[in-house]
Image (tube, rainbow, N blue to C red; front, top):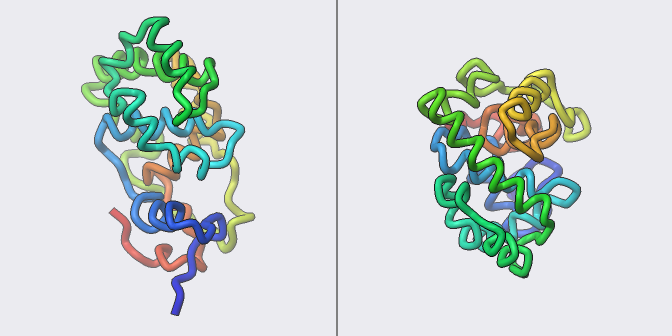
Length: 189
C-alpha cells in the first residue's frame, strides 16, 4: 500500500525523499539553518523543486553555506556565481546570500547561536498544526510576520513573511504535515 503524503509532493523522487526525511523535522544546526534560509530566498517566485534539484550545486557554489566565507565574497565571486548554470543566476538573490551571511554572523555574536535567536519565534519548540488539507495551510502567520520584520531590521534580505513561513516549515519550526499524510501522526524530531 502506498503511503499518503502531503498533496504538494509529486511523484518526483527528490520531492518524496525531501518530504519524508527532511521537511518539518526540527533543525538546530546553525549552518543548516543558514543554508535553508538561503535556499528559501532563492526559491522566491519559483517552485521549490527548482531549488531542491539544484541544492548540491548551491552547496558547492556557496562554500557549503559557510557564512564566514560567504560574508567575504567580492564582486569577482558574484560574477562567477552569475555565470554558474547550476544555480538560479539572479544577481539580487546571489547578493542577498552574501548580505545575509554578514547579518547571520552578527546574530550569532549577539545570541550565541542563530538557533537560539530563530527558535524564539515559536517559543523554542515546534508548532504542530492540524490542517485537514493542503488548501488550509496559510502562506504566512503572525509568527512568520514577526520573524520577517525582525530579520529585515537586522539587515537580512529576501525574508518576507511567506519566505519565513516556508523556512519555518522546512526547518521544523512548524509541522504542517496534513492530517491525511502518514507523517502527521509520527513524532518528528
